[in-house]
Image: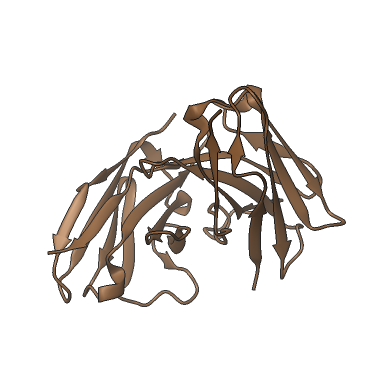
Length: 125
Length: 109
């Protein structure tokens, strides 16, 4: 059973950089993209971006200028950095598995399946 | 960018009743690209349905999905007490790659 666990500071000051890491157990990073998704206090969900084991990534255009994702296959981890944060970035941040990477056309390819439990990040001075 | 709309915003029903949740896309979506999630307070979303109509592992058969083009439906045939939650649809698209609907809350009448 794949499990994901987010870690990182729960409080970040405005204009600083948010850094989160997701540790994956029960499976390797290969064959999938690994996503970051956030949920705002009003409950809306926003996909931030994804990365795969080789570092290939795709970011939400609305956040692209501020985010960087990286992967550490030796630790089975992937990470998110978001610069110049503001109060509008306050949210629960989830890491998740999906979509599948590589050539994949079946209906099992295009969704997110396993999620971490989420970590609340508050942007405040 | 394709936008998802979910209706109703809140659905008030009693246990044992049938729930019908709608997800509408502003542009046509491949049936392979539409998924549904359930979220309870304090928990991460849980995958229910992928590819419009395929139940995820361990999901009971009272949950079913259907639809095509721009109109998709999640049906819960007989509500159990544990089914009262918020439900989101998700589409795989072009830019951004994933878009979520705003959610439908199913609460106890």
